[in-house]
Length: 267
Image (cartoon, rainbow, N blue to C red; front, top):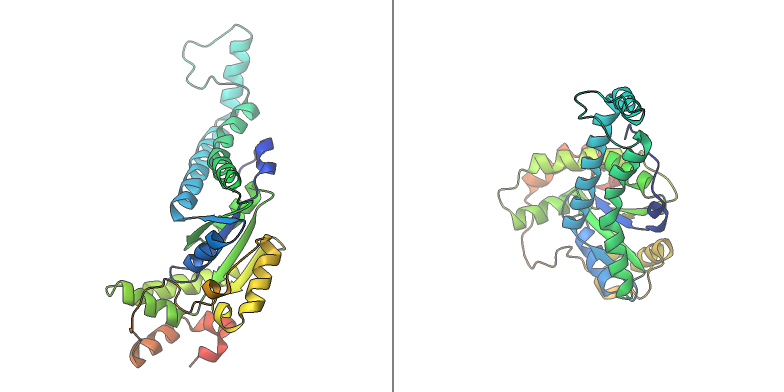
């Protein structure tokens, strides 16, 4: 975000954990179920995530508009306070920094409600999950919520495409591969202590280690092994499998990042 605004005090009281993934069928649903079954965790869904980011975009849009005419607004306010108002003053508003801080504070109302509701129900750790979240968006969220954390969960594109076609046979495979490849490349640039990267396959293949990383990072208690170890992310029964031609297509379209994250799947 190319804006300058003082964060309100409430920002330091909020501690969301943003669970993101490169695209659908990557493990977000698995984590959401597991967290909601735990002793002290709660994970909200895509709608809440979208509404938080919509409020952020709305506020940033207003701030950018006002910053472009900051000098005009300051002059109009100065004249009005000196009892020498102009005849027409649509720009007249409170002092600029105070006004911008007030506009931006709207971003925090919904997260405050989400956190308060979770705590009232005995869930001290709260999360919100969303697939197809770009790296720049995650960086913005971490910057305006100083006490927040994030989990990036990812999965190999062959299984993602298989599950996508199972649920929606009309899925454009190339679009899914393009999104996965771009997202995984962006996620390479993110490496800070407030972000945990989890590989979906480890939930089944290295369940204890997967649980340990998740619990240590989030302070969640009572995660269930049988939920985490589930090898079907959406828990949708299906015998659908990719044919060889489709496997080759996915491998070809995702080869750049497959070489980084899943080299054993590169043809």
